Every structure is written in structure tokens, then in C-alpha cells.
Length: 119
Image (cartoon, rainbow, N blue to C red; front, side, top):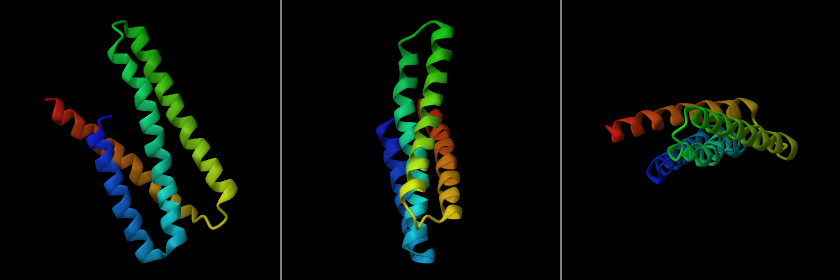
């Protein structure tokens, strides 16, 4: 994942968080931010592992690295969400789910944007 795409996702996350804080309050905004950042941090860490596939020419090695990257991404998301549920008592579950969904949509949009840049 390129720094420009990460920067784009961070800006979109910030705008959404401010929008939710204005409309629904601070607790909902923090909940959205937790949802967004859990997915974004998982993608950043997972993309570092997936980047190893560019060095490998073996199809099996590429698949294994991609599976490792996806597993790490899922573990990071689950860990961040577990910490949020454990320690943040004012969590708004619906806002958290919205944050997760928006982050997934942003990651898909980033991949599409990255494919257009490569061509």
C-alpha cells in the first residue's frame, strides 16, 4: 500500500469522524474512529507482509504470503476490537460497525485507485 493511499484513507477517516462527532456526539465519533483504525492498521501491517510476494517468483510462495498477510490483518482487527470492547465503556456498537464498513469500502476503493495508477 502506497503512502499516498494511506494518506487518502486517513483523510477520509478524519472527515467521517468529524462528521459523526458533529451529528451524534463524541462517543459515537470515537467508536467510528476505533472501527476505522482497526481495519486501516490491519491493512497497513498486512500489506507489509503481502509486499514480500513481489520478491517471490514461486506461485506457492505468493499464495502463502498473501494468506499470512490476510491472517495478520484479521488478527490485528480482532485484537483492536477486543481492546476497544474491553476498555472503552462508552462504545457505540452501531457506530463501530459503520466505521468497520466504511473502512472496508475505503480499502476497496484504494485497491481500485491503485489499479488505475498502475495502468
